[in-house]
Length: 341
Image (cartoon, one colour):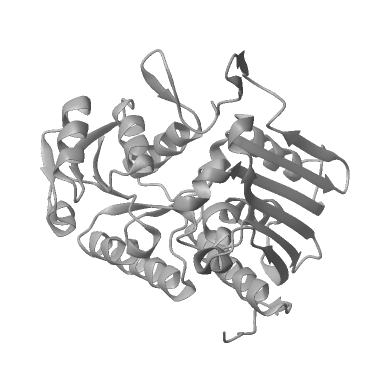
C-alpha cells in the first residue's frame, strides 16, 4: 500500500497533534506543513523532519505531490481551503466543527461530490474503543436501538477564554451531537436548548459556559446533551465526560473522571487524558491516530468511508445551529423550520 502524502494546514495546538500523529504512521508521509507563523513552521519542521515549510494556503493546496489536505485552522476559515483543495483534486480532512454554518457544510459536501474526492469530518470519537463498543452494542441485542441517550462533556474553565470564540455547541457539544446521530441512525426532528453564562461579558453571553439540549429523533429516540467549561482548573481533571445509552434490550454507560490513570502529589490530583492523543514509547496513540489510520486506508484503497460520514457532519451542523437558535430564543426548533435571529 502506497503512503498517503499529507499536507497540514494550520499548526495550532491541535494542528501539531495532527502532525505528530500523521508522522507516526507507516501509511502516511507529511510532505508539507503550512502556517502563518514562521517561527512555528521552523520549529515543527525541525522536530518532525518536514522540509517543505509554507506560509500560503494556496501554495500548499496547489502542490501536485499531496494526496490529502488536513484543514486544522480556525472554524471560520475552513470553507475556502476545503473547496479549493477538493477542486484541485485533493482528498480533505476537515477538523470539527467542519463549520459553524449549515450552508457552508452543504457547499463542502457538494464540492466533494463534484470533485469525486473523499471528504472526511474530524469526528474522532467514532474511533474511541469505548464509544465504538456502544455502537456495536446498539446494533446488536446487547443494548439494541436507543430509547434515550445522555451525553455529558466538561472541560477545565481556563479553556473557555480561548474557545468562547464560537458557541459552546460547536466547540464542545458537536462531538455528542455526532455520537447521538450515529447511535440513533436517523435524523433529529426537533431541539430545545438552554444556556447559562457565568462570566458577565458580551462574548460569554454569546457562548454560554453551561449548555443543555434536548433532542427528539425522527424514530422517537430522545437525547439529552450537557456541555460545560466549568470543571475547576485546580481539580486536575482534563476530561470529565459521561454517557448512558438506554436501548430496547440493555444499557451502556461509562464515565471518565473517576477511572483510568491518576497522579497524586503535593500539587494535588492530575487525571490526564490518554484516549484522544498521547505518546507511547515515542509514538502517537489514541483515537486521533486510529482515525488518521482509517482515513489513509480509505484513500489508499479507494474506498468510501463507512465509519465516518460527512452527510452526518452536515446534519450535525444543522442540529448545532438549531440548538444555538433555541438557546437564544427560548423556543423549540423543528429542523424543517427556520428561526431568524
